[in-house]
Image (cartoon, rainbow, N blue to C red; front, top):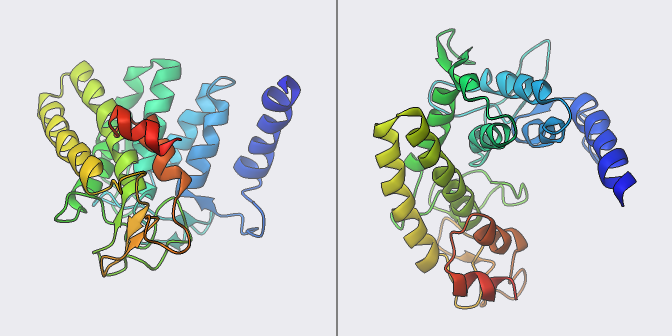
Length: 262
């Protein structure tokens, strides 16, 4: 197990995902905004500078409005600007992981341009744009819109009218908000410290009420309000990520977490 976890799996992630940018039936060689950010975590205990470079690269493929390219090809720099709702949040997530490993707070002030504008902003400001975009794209019930999909790429057509919601994304966003509340306090950003506290409180209430189905967390809702991953579903009654992330993020009550993981 030690050889596998600390040797071959690291080698596989680096060679196949970072350098080869291929997986299963996808052999395009494109950079995935979500994919290579996630994969670059493998470098954190090995060579943190490589994770820094990945963060820089992906921040430079963010638009001024906080959206990002879902994927792009190097050299041509052409890619897909989609409505997938989780992509841009992986930037602040990776910055959190990076800081937990490196404690290099000065990295946040490095200036990076936008994909659609040569104007630069700090890495911290790029992260804020990602978070603010997600906070703006929420339903009347307080849950994030799923749009053209989230971490589950198969849910790519359930929220195209910007009405469908993602409960997993709500857990994920809550995790990021909690970490950026601490980061804003450390950096003296009182404006976002208060804003994120308020937003996190509103979000967690929505998760624990609207997102809870009595025994577990639902996965999502469609544009027409139909529930995905609920007890009334004939198929796909329960989705793993909507349960595990309630524990990872602490967004479920203690009782909900216990039931969801039972």
